[in-house]
Image (cartoon, rainbow, N blue to C red; front, side, top):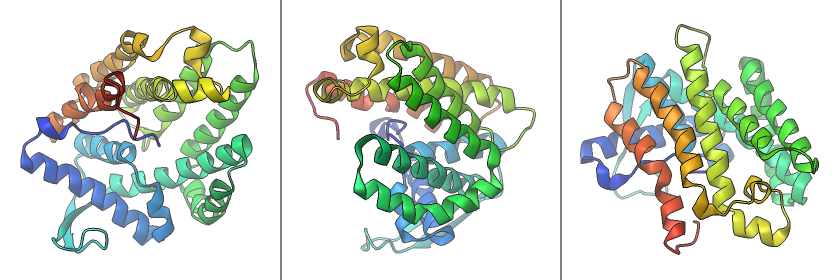
Length: 272
């Protein structure tokens, strides 16, 4: 994933930061325990948010464990474990697998090809368990590929395609909240795609890569209003959901955290 759906640490209390970190560490440990150490490379804050969001809505049973992290061995870390962190780990593998396939086809990136081969066995396990979500990812990747090759395709088609993929990831199973979650995921996916296009604009322009902003004849600094519309519609759906647990933490991400890299870029800082 892209790493834009992150918290703004300055707007959180220490207890909330610890809670947020426990989801990140929990997802990392779950990836390792379920699949292997190599799958941990795909760990992202975007999927951490997926786990946090679904946990806040459904309030499953949670378990927190203390452990020593090899990357940060001095102090013990806390890792959350629950149904939706497990689900986010599966979706992490699925998205990473297709990202590798896409990178190999587009750029003949040999590292991506090798990593994709490593992920293939784990992906097949996920595919058997979540065929709807995996088919959505596969279909979106194919559609985006065709749009990028079609010189006449409208940029909205690519943006909406990304939205459709994310909409299915937010629906763990069909229930009372499925429609709201699909709408939320759809708008968040559109926002992420536009944000990534804005952040990669100069590089894509230089290399001649497809970028919807180029088609729209827009520069990154002119995209704030359009992106605000997408994330605004996502937050509207969030506010309608009966989320109490971690609501402030989720608002921190949606109203502020998602904009951090964009504003940093506008102030002349390079994309990390």
